[in-house]
Length: 198
Image (cartoon, rainbow, N blue to C red; front, side, top):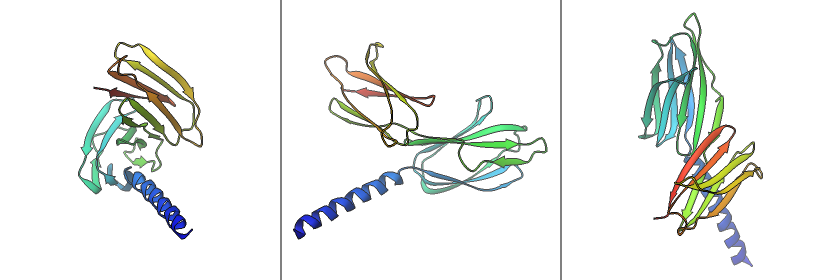
């Protein structure tokens, strides 16, 4: 009995550790002081994060890839930006966060420290011709389709989350096509993933 109990505790600790490690892969963004249209940004676990600044017309004004650190502090200068609404977007393999920045007519800069949107990207596990789609923190319906490069659609579905999660496994036939595109749409966000069976 004690061996069984030890095995259960060991398995439980492995699952807990795996859960903590998976959360470790996500970056964490926070803002420091905002002074005279200069913004200080701190990123934790920024192993591969892209930072973009857009205006309200969705024109990209700045982009940068950050790949070198557990803790990065960056300073962004908005001195040349006219009064208006801007967005700072941070994107990794796992998620996208979008923050609103407002520059007033008096050139005061105000930053919303809570993201106006945060999206967890779909995650895929591929083994042979089996592809598993996993999504977390899902709030609305998810539309999924699988097609090949000739636009032949093999699967379409609308899924609702179960406890905030969507999990779907696809058996992709290599005799039918050697490359498939899995398209996922959630809350207006569209993600395409190409799966190659070669």
